[in-house]
Length: 323
Image 1: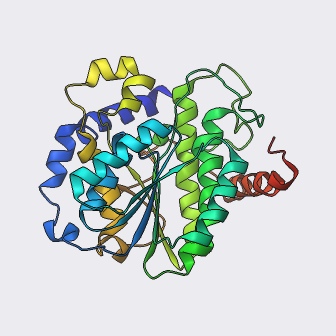
Image 2: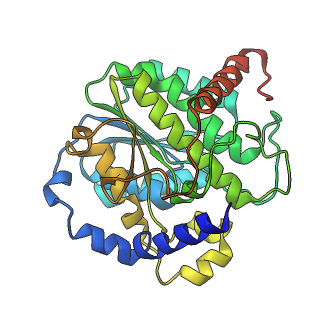
């Protein structure tokens, strides 16, 4: 990451990504955008047992949505389920246990889910920032396995179900950190140089933005969007970025503020009046690149990313996802 990108990004973050940035943006929100009843519509939210995922689940449950919480930890998932039901009065809240770092498990879960449920909106919220290079049992670097390959497989597997429904949407929770990264398709699993978990995460989030843009072109029946929640006070930030948290904790957004644009993109009629494939911050589409930062990838590299992921998906049948 260049010194220039880092400096420009951090200044932008202090102005826009903090609690103060949200409060300034919220002055321009249209209250009627979220005055909707989504009773009967089905929402799947990954990583929903805490933080932004749980906050989004609660907000959508209050609007009448059928909620599918997809989580890895059974106890935490069931506790979140109780909290969402109690906070919303909505009993239509289900728990599904799934490890988003396990490609085969994701595919099998999605295939089974489609036979038993309808799905109108998929919210790809689950993510991780592992600060040392870890390899999953499938031989895949853990950040990439969870944030990119897992998101890719779940979305691709559920697209046939989404395409059957009216006003189907896919919302992916990315990060403004992706602005400091240019797509690197030649080291997707961070095998070269010194491993940096924060930069690996930012690279993953850049990849999610590119996936969203490409999916929007390929699947016109579904509205795709990707968003940055700002700097929010979540358990993930506290555990993965303790130094950042200590410095910024008094300026961080609440979980609800971080989830606001997720909810807006998932339920508001206003969101789908905008083009599919855009990157959002505080209910507005924003640029996916910093000025003069040289982070634009070639069309060939973007296509290569999709091809690598598709090849890994197709290897599921053989039990090998190494790349």
